[in-house]
Amino acid sequence: MSRLYGRVFQIAYVVPDLDAAVDHWTSTMGVGPFFDFPVPLGLDTLNVDEQPVAPDTPIFGGVSISYSGDTMIELIQPGTAPSTYRQFLESGRSGIHHLGTWIDDYEAAMVHARAQGVPVVLEGRLPLSRFAYLDTAKDGLSPLVEIIQPLPEMHALFARIKAATTDWDDSEPRRSI
Image (cartoon, rainbow, N blue to C red):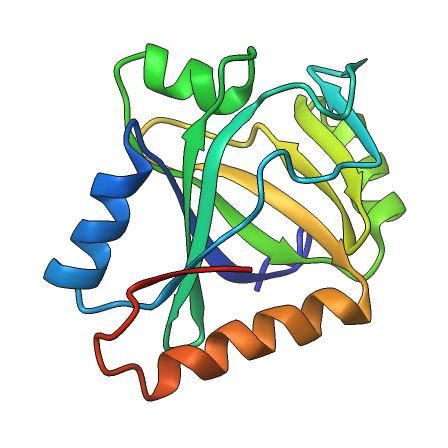
C-alpha cells in the first residue's frame, strides 16, 4: 500500500490490439474471463493534461478487465484521440502502463500530487468513480499511478467480475459488462 496513493489493486496494460491481448491472457496465462466495458465509457467529465475535453472524446478503443486472484488485470487499447495511452504506444512502448489504487481521500491525494509537481495526465468522473492518472513514471522504476475513489456500485461490479474468475472453466473467455 502506498501511504500517498492508496492500495494497489490493479495492473493495467496498454496494448495495440485488445483482441490479441485478451487471447494471450486467457489462453497463455490462464486468466479470465475478461469483461469488456462499453466504449465510450460514459464519462461525466474528462480532462487530458489538465485541459477539459468532451467526455465522449475517443481516448479508448477498448477496455477489458479480469482478475488473477486479488489483482485486477486491465487491458486498454487506445482510441484515436490524444491521451496518455496513445502517447505510450507511440513512444514505442506497450505493456504495463499504470497501477490502479483505491483512495479514500481523493482531494488530499490530488493536493499532495500537485504540490509535489506530479503531472496529472488524465482525470475524470464516471457514474461509478472519480479517477486521476498521476505521472509518477520513471523508466524501470515505476509506472503511472491511477488513483480511484470508487462508489459502492463500482465495488459491487468488480466483486461480480472477480467472482466469475474464481471457477472459470475456459468457457466464454470474453464477456460484456
